[in-house]
Length: 173
Image (tube, rainbow, N blue to C red):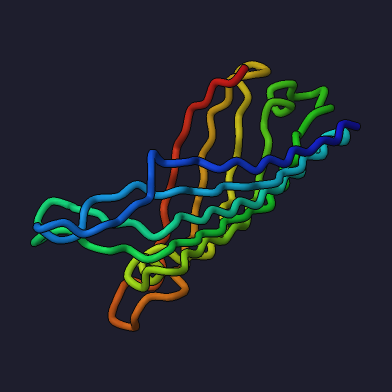
């Protein structure tokens, strides 16, 4: 059995946050961002269970973007995301040893943003993933995932949900 976890908090400091006006109006500004998260993992026999929570806060900022008529003041922005995941390795199958490299997985997570209504409506979601990993080597995996996303804050005339099929190849060390 292996168990572990990690927690970290880190400010990401911009080069300044002064937003003064000059003869031409507000100036562009940098913003400070504070990001923190915690994660945990448990591996026991064929089971692997993981969970993670992330939170970020960005200070208000003056921003310019292509197509804007000048500088736009963006409010303080906060986002949170979390997931919990379980996987089961089909090991111990003597008749078909390749089955020991197959790992069905299930994952549930949520993401939301507050502070900017348009972004909050677009980004807020609940997500279910059901998939299968195939381990080519201890640190090389291919996976196929069926993902169901429900957008929880959109207007009735916007897309409310989507289903995606994801294929992935990953290498870790």
